[in-house]
Length: 212
Image (cartoon, rainbow, N blue to C red):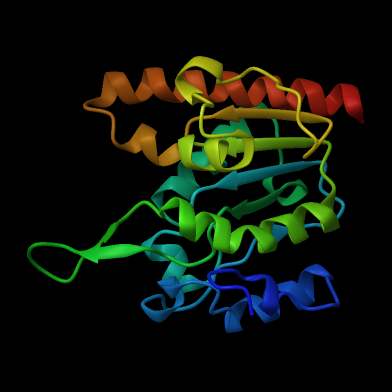
């Protein structure tokens, strides 16, 4: 068995259903020990667009579905404004288990960024998803997803909304993670950030229409 890799846990039958079942038994890195469950991607195999975030959050860890917490609501709003139907998309994360640290007070679990070793360990799951879905457009949500898939030098702040060359899909781009919009300092800043997010997603919608 390769140390710190999900590869031994990926089944030979790589249908999305088989992958989603198998990921619950993954021990490719230590994150499974503290997570409630693994959270696999969801959406149709025929999806033309795939959105990849960093990792499941607190709500996702509890409910077992990607992007169902506060950031998921922001994503849904952004997709609706851009004219992208979420049920026509495939949504997933680079890492399938929630990495967290206890809050100083209370029972709240605070998100902690997965390190490079954990991202690499989980990569076989994402590669299997890409292999099954074969999206025309791949959208990285946030710096962790973008750097994990497009290289450590990639900067979302400088390259968001731009389409870059990649073997991962015919069209590959990035934008901010929707959670970053929630962290803006006030309502005005959140409105500006949301408008920029929708602008990025509208570019994706335009490419999807052309590629249809």
